[in-house]
Length: 288
Image (cartoon, rainbow, N blue to C red; front, side):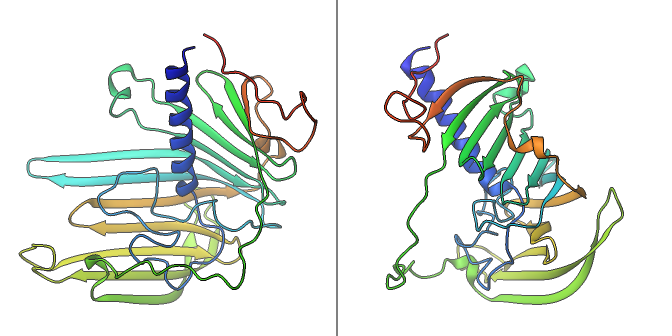
């Protein structure tokens, strides 16, 4: 494999992992500023079609003692003059008792994969017991390993720089917090949830708009599971998006390790175990 090809594949893997980190249910309750533009784990970037930036990612805090496994479905639809667009992404997410996480995402056959029908399916595993992360390419039955590095906690006396003024979509924002229930579409199990609904109005003329633009985001969060179960967003500019969990149950322990039938093709980073020339040694790019 040429260096250029390897860089492209590695870049795609990194992009996929970044997307996966945004896909699946937030660990931890939505903070007060959850839906401010461009910040907070629940933000869906305006105009973007993504794997599910609707909801907070596993990239947040580590949650222990609350294992689960569930199927997620993300739908995005837009109505155009004389036309419409609809895409659906499905997959599986899971969390182990130690806080390890699993994400299996089947991307839709759109864009470059529409003709070939060979849309990728990627699995991202974060194993906190082994302090390793794995990316599996299901079609090729291969996986890569990345070391999890510990980072020093931020100093308490440091303040985050000012992020600047809010964008126009933050104008005239109203927030409604209530308690309700969520029924699993597959198992019919009922969960108590915190229901947060954020409505924003961009006044006419704010961004050159002839009339007011109203967007809404609603999130159902289960304190018992420490998990977001559903998010819906409506925006007349960019369409409607929905994220939903179903078939919620307990995970299999085998989920948090690479499939034993898959081939290891790359190991990245400096690992804790081993020494010079051991597991910590970088292996060369795989050859065609």
